[in-house]
Length: 319
Ligand SMILES: Nc1ncnc2c1ncn2[C@@H]1O[C@H](COP(=O)(O)OP(=O)(O)OP(=O)(O)O)[C@@H](O)[C@H]1O
Ligand SMILES: [Mg+2]
Image (cartoon, rainbow, N blue to C red; front, side, top):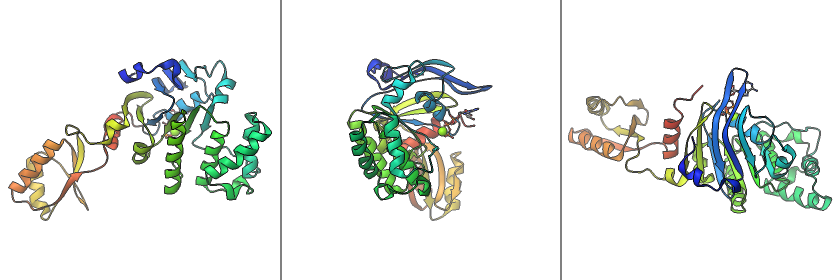
């Protein structure tokens, strides 16, 4: 399913164009007819539950897996026809790292600089600069295997950037990072996007995507189920349904009002968790509870609109 805004995108100029791509592993259809566009200069988030097909799609974009059917263009090039040209312009950060443990950190980056045919001068400039960017400069002489998980991820990010790619594929780059490193990752991706790089990033950490990404593509059970501008998801619209939480001085009286309205709120230490409602529905409920003499202590929406959209859009596709 491609939405109008994406059809309007000048496809020839996009970093990544995916059209009706499928991939099966025997009986399992990991990706079944995905279409999406990742423009230059923007961060596009690939969001979806475990098993949705995110990694499978990224592996195909990174030339590491062939599609069963469909059409992929990276910077205008078909990865199946010319994988070398695609790798030249693409930076790829996998979710799990195959590391060359015997190498020292700076040697590891130099190895990939050579693989991408950087000149000696370029390499001498790029390796320390990138180690500083991902705050691994003090580990330059350490063997890769002494790095912690988050440090290894930061090294993988540096590796993905060594040849100044125009297209960047990051599979859950923030998953092992501490809060400061996540903020730095977000800032780095924003800077790269401002420089015109096309960035596709998969993540489960919804709270961070709102600030990291410009657009979210929701995938579920191997298909794109929706795509939304982050700015449209940033604020709760008055007609949007989001979950609410309510807490009262006298919980039994509150429960009676909820039951009367057919609302089966789940009791939690913080109050009752209520199902998604619009602001109008929520304020009617509050008025009724107060009218019935219930002493309310707190009432407000929980979660973010992005979380609500995610939960609503990906409900069907859990495996
Ligand atoms: N090599 C493989 N052989 C068989 N099945 C596979 C293979 N790779 C992936 N799959 C299946 O394809 C589906 C999609 O997997 P994929 O790794 O793409 O999901 P994902 O969206 O990246 O999930 P997660 O959020 O857990 O990383 C899953 O059902 C998975 O079991
Ligand atoms: Mg994955």
